[in-house]
Amino acid sequence: MKNTFFGGYNMPNNDYKFAKNSVFLITGGAGFIGSHICEELVNMGYKVRCLDNFSTGKKENIEHLLNKKNFELIVGDICDLNTCINACLNVDYVSHQAAWGSVPKSIKLPLDYEKINIMGSLNMLQAAALNKVKRFVYASSSSVYGDDKNLLKIENKVGSVLSPYALTKKTVEEYGRLYNNLYDLETIGLRYFNVFGPRQDCNSKYSAVIPVFIKNLLENKKIIINGDGTQSRDFTYVKNVVQANLKAMLAPSSATGEVFNIACGDSIAINSLFSKIALILKSQVKPSYGPIRKGDIKDSKACITKAKKLLGYNPNYNLDDGLEFTIKWYQKKI
Image (tube, rainbow, N blue to C red):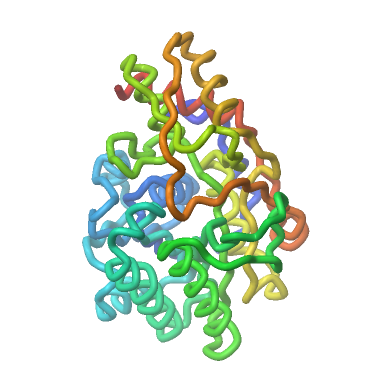
């Protein structure tokens, strides 16, 4: 079944056996990832509540949902506990995506990241527990692996974190585990690996590499790669992340209190990624090279065995598929 919004294929809705009257809260629901989760659940016919303060989210990401009867927008901040408590009223499932991303930005603003990512997440966990939410699924990050020297990242083998952003995600994982074990709130953490896709911001100095490559090549602008370009990443199309969130909500209780890698289980060097995008766009632009960014992991490839086994996660989109859909979206947007 074609997805009429930006191309590609929807996941079959009958894979998800939620009760008909289920209510979902998506924090950061106007953000890149959150808006895709909102869209999927709204299209499935469920009641969806979006909580966002638009500090990084954009109203345009959810514009097409605002007139839907089963979609509700709450403009509010996760740093306010009462807002979180009210947002969780009568909610069955929480998908907690609200956070500030970007390793470089966190190095400049560590106090803000502490407040938003850690305290905001703790507010949400407390609010969900007070409202007896059935399942709390939250976004973590591959950045928690830090200086782990192994190329293949396995959930129980992490190193020392390399940035305030990574520390916030690691801390939220610990709070997630504690709330699962102590406060009768079922939690599951998802460690995202370099998510990309339509709606990802391409205009910020902290934008991720794929939207920056696409935008600059479309506009015939200079490309600067940090480091020598041999560093590798496991890039994950956003629809795979949507699938992971929904399957985590329905996973057996034996999976709760755990964290899972969400990726494709493959990696590509940044130089090769650039060449792939340039080839698709038939661009002759050549990259320049700059200094290595502080806090960056050298290589990253996810082991997704645990997610496949306990969540039933199985990525439907590989890198090439994702790039095709993403580039088509930006070509219409830019």
